[in-house]
Length: 171
Image (cartoon, rainbow, N blue to C red):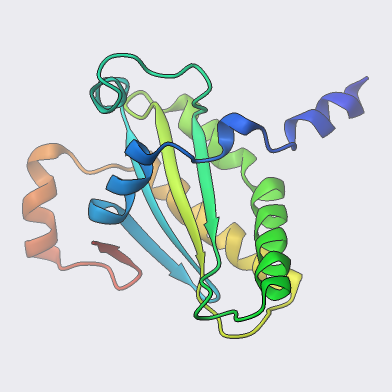
């Protein structure tokens, strides 16, 4: 019985797949970005109010607290079989390593949902071990960002005073 609960928690449900255009478009306009070769993650958190504004007050019930989409550019990986292989490796790495981030997000008072796009930036297929290691690293960095958010007043002054971190850019 306990093993069945464990297996169910690691499945990737429909509500965890980022598919609403109104959530995807703003992700690439003004979200946070993290790099760890061969992956780049563009992510954005939304509060309950921001989510309601996005959907004009009617938030679909299927939206999970953690949503992701995977992109393997055709320009980088020419053959479809290579793109599908890397998409599967990335999905597996995410599925196995997302739980700490999911728990941190559920404990967060101000963030209702976290939308992220995982982009494969390498020119060749990388081994699964490397993809898993970099996914763990990126998800841990997002978890750290969520647990220590900047206050709204300090947000504009902090970047100009301290400079921007080389690993995090606000696009």
